[in-house]
Amino acid sequence: MNKKFIFNIIRIILKPFAVLYFWINRWIIHNKFKYELNNNVLGKPSLISYPFIFLYKITLKICDLFFFEFGNYALSKYKNFSKDHYSEQGIAYSHLKNITHEQKKQFYLNGRSRLEYFYNNNQYLLHFKNGDSFLDIACGYGRDIRFLSDNFDKSKIFGFDINPLALEVIKIGNQNSNVNVMSKSFIDFNFLNELKSGRYDWVLICHALSVVFESDLEKTLNLKRKLIKEFIRISNKGLLILDHAPEKKFRVQLEQNSRCGIFHNYIELFPSRHQGELYMMESNESFAYFWKKNI
Image 1 (tube, rainbow, N blue to C red):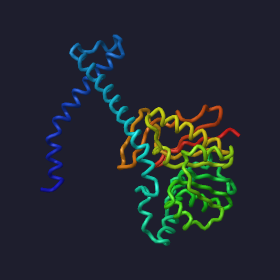
Image 2: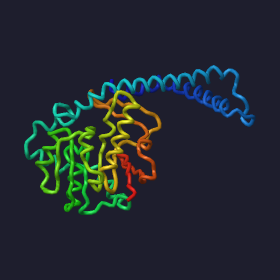
Image 3: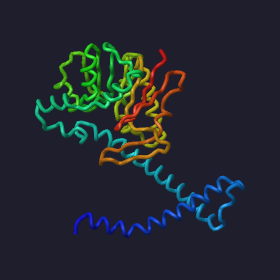
Image 4: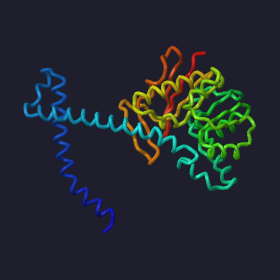
């Protein structure tokens, strides 16, 4: 008995339940719409639908509350789990531990940059110039640093990350003396405060803000607001954040034993528009938030 046969049997069993669910759900949604519209054009909802409408709304509310509490609890635990995940002892870069010097070099040279797509397709916004300075926050093993180094060889390119294994890959693979990386955490505000305002022309952070947490949603969002404010401060021309697309509802997605992602509306984390302009771009794997400073 193969998997396809079993799958088809399950589909046959589930189909009548799916059909029943469709018609009941359609009926409830339509009556709920008439109830909320409350006019004489469509008429009043069916009397028998009222308890179903009430049950439907209560169920949605309970689900929202449940997943909100689940998310807050997950954040309180993954606040520390995530730090361990990206540390030297964590699993994020554990594949770099037992490879040769040459393999590390190739890892750097063959790394695929997420920044490359956005730059190649949005140069009317991303006015990077050869000679501009760049800071890659949470640079990992340098996929975007290599792209910047290859295309802006006269630019000073800086990066930092908490994982020394990842930084070692950059140091082995990089041949550009204008590239400098160091071991730092971007949630270390003492370190960020030491950086002068406008020190770097362009500041980049790629898929790192979504794995930084505090003990609940409110504290997590406040932390991210503070971080974005600092990133904008130390940039001279603009900040580019690559991460997930904005979502109206807060949710947490468990991905690994020590890694999860938080999804929310990134747009609300940026400062008021009179301080700059926010542009958004999208690729197949990332969503870009580009903050262009008013100069």
